[in-house]
Amino acid sequence: MEHQRKQLLRFSSVLDGKLDVIAEQFNVSRYHVHVICLLQRKPKTSAAYWQRRGQINHQLGSQCHAVFEIINGGEQASYLFTTQYHRQNAWLMHRMHLGQQLGVTER
Image 1 (cartoon, rainbow, N blue to C red):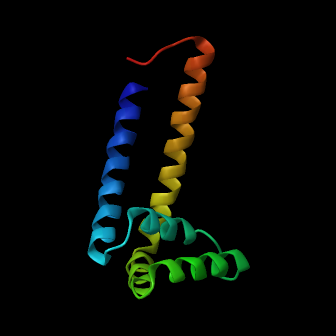
Image 2 (cartoon, rainbow, N blue to C red; image 1 turned 60 degrees about the horizontal axis):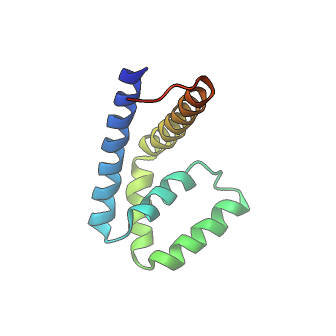
């Protein structure tokens, strides 16, 4: 399990690096890039998608369209990112919870 944890953390750092590159390229925060990636999971026909997209557009101004374009260009990568991100978090939370129940501490 420790090996899997290290692999997931390594993968996470690669994804964070890619988010940082996009954020730096467009002079926006990594948080906004991450939010846009997560937004891509919502159906474009939903009101929630367009409401959140409008908020992001207001926050990012002229950079919003460019960030959406680069992320949409890699829509499959965005989907894989969000799926892996959520799996990783769920696995780590489960592992921590299990360790607490069993009284196990990480080294």
